[in-house]
Length: 119
Image 1 (cartoon, rainbow, N blue to C red):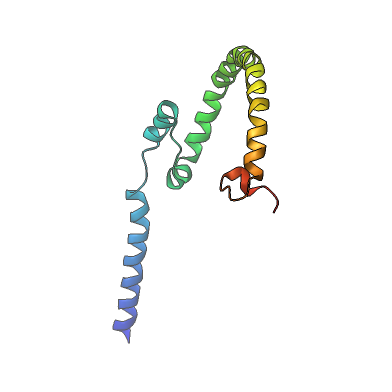
Image 2: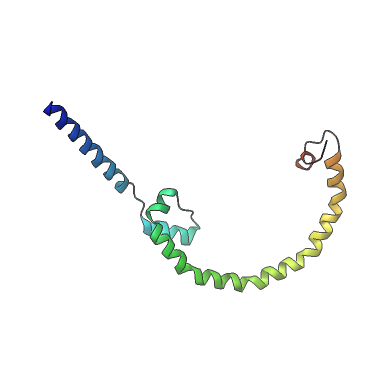
């Protein structure tokens, strides 16, 4: 009976040691993860996100002011471009509307627009 108990304890200890050792050996390098996020627009995996959560959050706050400044600096150009392209886009949409409407109501049409048409 004592051998059985000792064997069970040894198996449990070995299993526990393996369980604790496995995640440590598979842990991502947080410095590399942060570098990839900043340079390659990397989306962290679940393991990276959990393991490097503190570093990722700190990096987000560190990058925030420059990203905000960049967004505001680019805003006038984006707004100007959207206003410049608006008349052409509006005209194009109105020009294509009758064809899209007709195609959507044509029987036997398998286009995505036709799928929305009532039967």
